[in-house]
Image 1 (cartoon, helix red, strand yellow):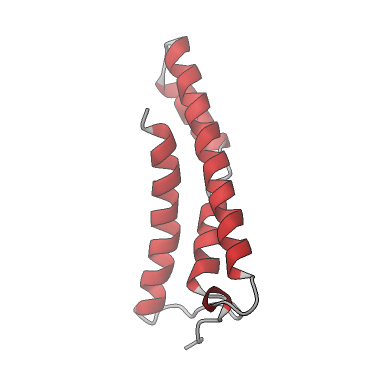
Image 2 (cartoon, helix red, strand yellow; image 1 turned 30 degrees about the horizontal axis):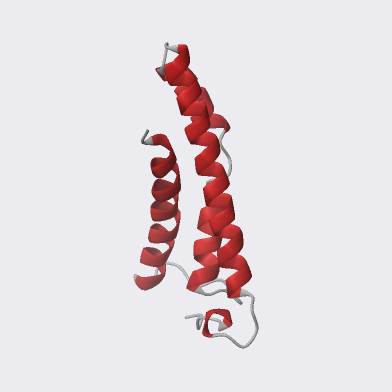
Length: 106
């Protein structure tokens, strides 16, 4: 039940949140030609890898029904994260929109 939201929200919050925090603290610079929407899209795509989640889930659940639910949750989380990432990157690439403007590098 919590696998899908955990995979979607957890990775986005950790990858994107830590990146923004490091930029705001001055410990990292915004990559050239990047803005926060592009960084968010990349953070979403970081969740697409699901091999470790499946492996840990297989070790965690002995019941076949629970294991199958975990597999569906992992796959659904990967599909949703991949779709969000693609949509964010496509939106960030539309010329003439505020979302396509590049954040200034420091």
